[in-house]
Image 1 (cartoon, rainbow, N blue to C red):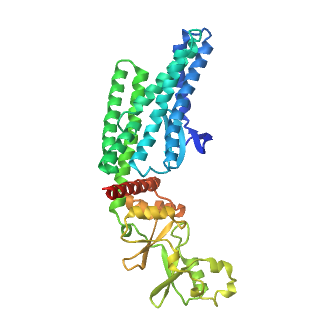
Image 2: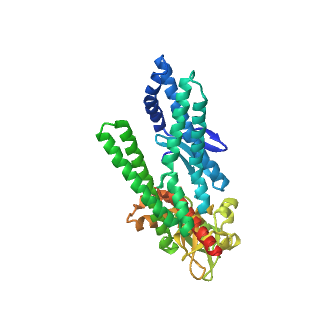
Length: 416
């Protein structure tokens, strides 16, 4: 989903709207306007109350998402943004909560807010006198919409809040986050399909708007459900592949006794393999002794390049971020996200350098497992940008889910 326009921030959380939200405002205002025509004489006033009803509805949706967001912050999860769009709103988080019960609390917070809003508005509507029919209609309408929002979201299927609650409960009972996702996704697909079928029947019977709305909601549910299934598939790939199955070779070798001019010549004639130059590892008598960057070439005058040797300026190999060749690929993704270099030195079973791995290498290996082979030009662009190719920017989130599942399983084993 595109991020949309940022309006303001609440407790540091950016609040954004999609362009499609404006169409939803127009449509809902048109639908609500007839409800006020019998209670008010100037037609412009009925349109004004219809617009106010729509804005209060989306304000309620925003409060619903804020309920999720504030609970997520309480559980130690960073909230990236809240975005309103034509079918409601969504709170984006940096990563999933690492515990089943934490996920349950975050999922339940939104419907609880909606239920409280429904109760409050319906009580206000009942308290208003008959001399204020417009505001009675307004608060009763928005109260009932909040009640519908809460009950609909509690349906037990992903991506609804009820599906997230179900996933958390299955996760807690079985100790498997993956099992929770599978159960909630299956029910989510069933519910979304039923909505599309019922929406089609409504369209057939002439209830055009309601039928179309149900079809849109069902289609959105199926799309989000596919995203959950894809995340599970990506998890399996990252767990099945090892680092050595994805590693590249973005390093060069120079002897320790060579002058700095040799390093300069190497840089001049070497082809760029990524956004940054290849690492240069230093050997001496057949042994790895360190690595060297371009800083000596920048700090020293050219006249010194023939007198100064590489070994006088090399740095320890331990300074480079590294990973074992036998590590699972998801561990490499986690290490890459923590590394300022955007690249890891791959060590053999004997602890010696034999390859490198970066985000483009990881993405290429994952796509090949999916049966997709990227052209060299695509991979070159990904290396230059130090990014995952072909929309695989979700890989860090997938790894966060794997880590959360591992943490919860370790906790379960410790308590058993």
